[in-house]
Image 1 (cartoon, helix red, strand yellow):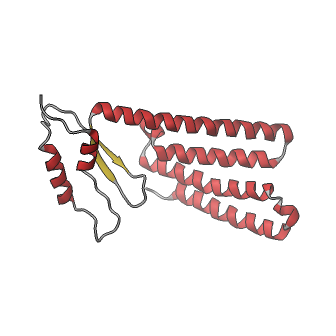
Image 2 (image 1 turned 45 degrees about the vertical axis):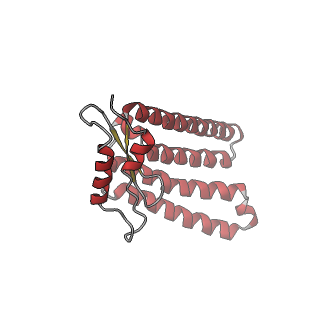
Image 3 (image 1 turned 30 degrees about the vertical axis):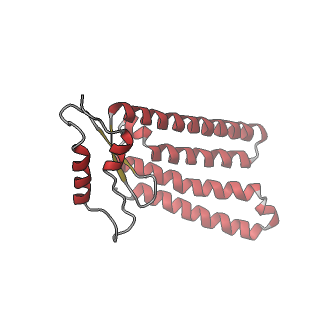
Length: 195
């Protein structure tokens, strides 16, 4: 039985972080780190999963996982994303029902913002792409559309919640026109650009 390094050791073996050009590791450094980790493994007998994580800004981490650890980590992420999506669905349903009952537009714009936010989080997590085989260009267009329209929805929601049309009608009208123009332009640009 050969000595097997832990998942943490494997994850740390190949770690590429691009914080700035001055200290960015090169591919040669990554190869040397991989070779060091490879000396502890008999790769002919092991299946390893490669995972790229890009959550922190301006950095990417490449890590090697054993299949069991990889499946467990992905299952934990899916559970967290599912719980978050459940909360989003409850908020959307509650606000939509509030809008249907009261006919106050605050409920509609809150539901619209929550829906746009839910789509952005879901597409960012990558689960629909894996489940439905979405292309990168479709995913990026959908993400851009949801972010652009979320700006419009949150501006209208906040304006109505703060009663801006009643307290500052000219500023409220200007604010809504500008944010609607910016959000709609961003959404159209995201749908039009070929990724």
